[in-house]
Image 1 (spheres, one colour):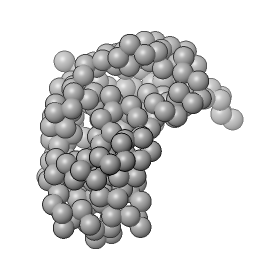
Image 2 (tube, helix red, strand yellow):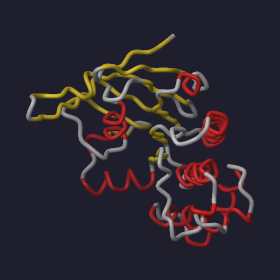
Image 3 (spheres, helix red, strand yellow):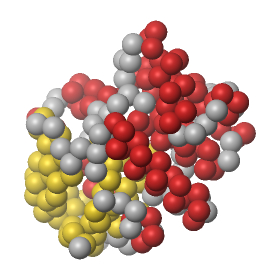
Image 4 (cartoon, helix red, strand yellow):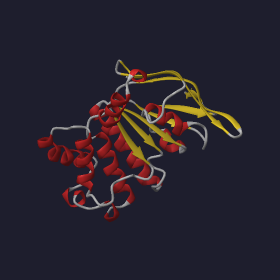
Length: 224
């Protein structure tokens, strides 16, 4: 269970203060897929950065399955990012000189997954997203955009994180492929009981989530 309470983040710029995230409070259950929609500059990416501990809030709390993340020291934050949270990006962010399978195994190495089990785990994750052994041996530039995003999803879920943060994961894909990618996220979340937050500007993609939240000028509201 993810519990976010009164989270705020303000940036100082030459033009004055920018309140990127304003007093955000929401909850998300294990296995739940929550869509966060909003216009460019509304605070979506800042919110994900705070939840992924890539940045620190000015106020508020983030609790994941009973652990108060704000209390973690530098080492604890690094361990959290490596083991407890997975990221899926619009640009895929796969390492170009590694095969699909090697990209997943590297993520398992960073999370200290047992060395003898990494090969089988990578195979299982590729199978989960519908990629066979032939595709597993290919480097990213030999895969389609949809296939690369499938690898990115497999990599994100590989170490069984508690939370997946997906930032516009379908933005580089056609609509049909994008809908398949969101369905894969739903299936993986259900299988592994992982909380998934999907940031998107696409209403059709958002409608596939269990719940929809909207962020505007840093403030979050739930859409019935």
